[in-house]
Length: 190
Image (cartoon, rainbow, N blue to C red; front, side, top):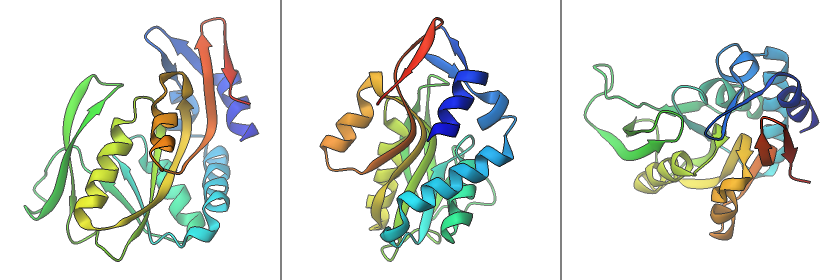
């Protein structure tokens, strides 16, 4: 997606440790015009897949999932990183390691919101090591839901996680696929 690549080049910042800071437009201070374009592009890419639910993990993926859900016309569900008082004990859960935070989270979704009748599109802001997507796949497997694929705003291709998931049969559509990045620049996959 050309608009995403241009925004990354213009406003993204490469930090040590293979971190790409996009908080100024994607996951803290959100460019709503770009967000709308992201939702429309995801809807276009998965138009024939009869998505009944969009699933992400809190918090950075929620805005992107909401944009996709609105464009597709499907509800959005997000896995919570912490069991709270408004989520009862009847949940699907799995452990996910966060690349950004360097921590493991026991993510949960209520059994009331995810079931075997669902055709689920997984959405996230980044695909780095693949742990978030694998965790979401595990939640869907536990619910008996069918995963149609994953829509990712930014994939760090140099980690190999996206290609490994694809080789395992998972459909992954990344709007910006970064082949290499350093303080000197960013190279997108052709």
